[in-house]
Length: 108
Image 1 (cartoon, rainbow, N blue to C red):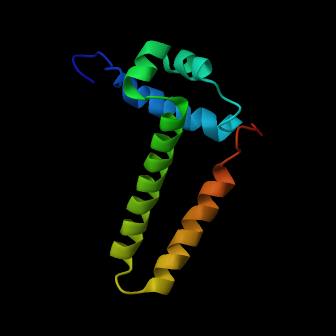
Image 2 (cartoon, rainbow, N blue to C red; image 1 turned 45 degrees about the horizontal axis):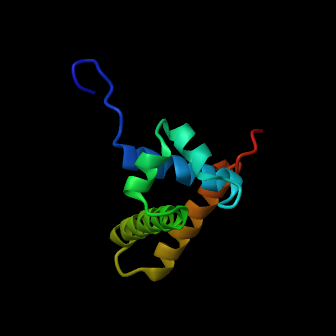
């Protein structure tokens, strides 16, 4: 926040975050580029300036998810150095926690 004004995230980041959320809730085939751009508050021209195609956007979403998982694993390795079993238990606990709060688009 700068001088009381909330800065909007960069268009590429907004598109990526919006696409990740929508793909998760509705599936990759269930979401079109028009819906992504509308929800991200942008337009197709901007989307295609940052991503060559919807397929490239999907790949970037998968890369971001993999990078997040890698960072989480790195945290577990740092918390439990050399203890592979404790690292695995931490991973399973985290996965369980994420699954229990993830309604996959279905509000309870």
